[in-house]
Amino acid sequence: MSTTKQSVFRKGSTTYFYSSLLFEKDDWQKVATLYEFVRRVDDCVDVVGGQVDTDRLPQLYEEWRGVVGGGESRYRWVNDFHTLSEQVGFEHSWIEAFFHSMFLDLHNTPCHTLKDTQRYMYGSAEVIGLMMNRIVGIHGRTADMCAQLQGRAMQYINFLRDIDEDCGLGRQYIPIEILKKHGLSSLKKDVALRQSEAFYSLMRAEINRYQEWQVQAERGYRYLPFRARLAVSTAARLYNWTARVIQHDPSIVYRLKVKPRKRRVVMTMLQALYASKRVNV
Image (cartoon, rainbow, N blue to C red):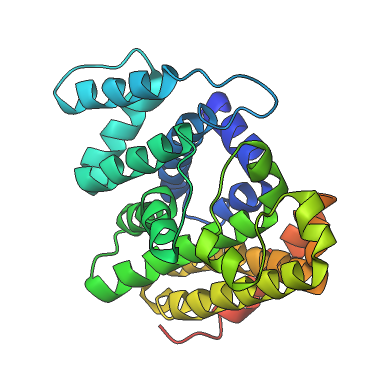
């Protein structure tokens, strides 16, 4: 793995980086190539405390389209991703869906309904699950459905964890219809803490929704090779930990970004190893 690629991976997500170390070496490099592409594209629409370059995402989209058309990108990581895509069989529609969700972020398109949120998550997370399946050589309708649900579940916890940051970016991922159901007009800090009972009710209900998706996603673990199952289950356990912390005290999302420390990551890796050895494949 190149130093640059590893740096992007490590900086982007402690959970994903250390969990990914459990993949087979060849798969690990492919996962890092995927992560670098997704992270670099996502970063261009997620500028915190600064001005988003609205031309950057369209430029990257055209770079990718050019490579698909037989050209070569000026960016090494775009070329690397396209090579990986052709090697393992990513569908072009998945990558188009990913860019579509990024364009929704660029224009801060709010999610009014749960269907809106799920459409966004299909491109931002579910297709990543599909790509991960192809990286480890997994095909099949049921396995793919479970991979999509795993991506969706993890993304939804990110939405709950990052509410304060997303409000600052003008983003609305938790559906407006769900806010109304709980009597909330906004998830901005002052509103949520003033109406704490309604806010707590919303957060715990949405964590329950995440848990339902997560249970369904785990039914697909049996399709994964041992090392891949170990990596995915480690990441999922860490997301479960994040969910439990938020469920205990939902207001924590306005005080800090809930993330596991390296020690917890290592302990979770060992727990996943023990549990995986007991699974009949």
